Image 1 (cartoon, rainbow, N blue to C red):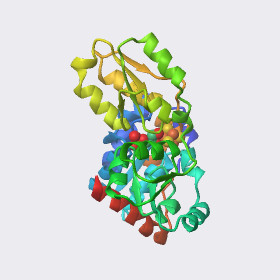
Image 2: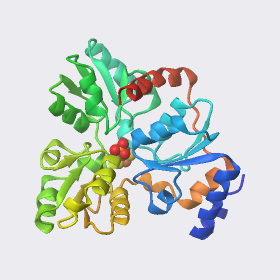
Image 3: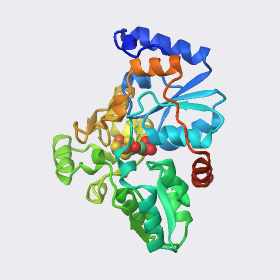
Length: 315
Ligand code: 13P
Ligand code: SF4
């Protein structure tokens, strides 16, 4: 295997070219999340949110997937594709929210709420998914909760998404006390200041934000929901612009793709540090050397598959 330090000294255009070539030669697709660096987004075979990426992982004919995102996303691709090799360019690229619940804590909670249906956000480990009845993502969480009728729901691990689903559906939701540090940090003051600085601008917020922020948003959407909304409503938002309440990588993408629309971040400090661990050098090293493969215990994978599959059948 080539030493990764040999890649760190190469210029960006050479790294991009090598990644393009390796994708073809090695029958590999690059699935890229919306928060990735723009130079990584530019190489994507598919760019999207967690749900779109999970669906795309089931559609691709390629033998291998290099996942540019965080660990739970690559694991979800592996859960859905046991026969494919899935790689994560930097194994430290994790989602801190996923670490806010583990299998033993969930087993205890299930004993406490034996009648509850466990709905688990995909931002979770394979072990936690395996103990859950159904998964959801930011774009289908409300639909998933609604599909469960009047059953009591133990919603893990994102407290804010749980409360948003409760508010939208009126369901009996018990929220787990987890959160995303990037979205939980947005405040009502950020909203007040943003609206003062950009009068008339539309505020779109991600459902991982706190309820007090979501209550002030004009629209709540997943990352791809935001991309699609801005693309499809140019005429309405061209004059006053749009304030984006999520991670900065998506703000940069929307700004780049909509040159006629003024695009503002709700907070320019909203950076997901682990999303930014993926660099061109690490992707080139990973794809050329087929390193950092995701390996899951087969029993856990099969149980987690049931929860992910059930989600994909709903929406
Ligand atoms: P999306 O599924 O909306 O892209 O969200 C993933 C995520 O991690 C948000 O912080
Ligand atoms: Fe996890 Fe938050 Fe980063 Fe999304 S933005 S991957 S929820 S830490």
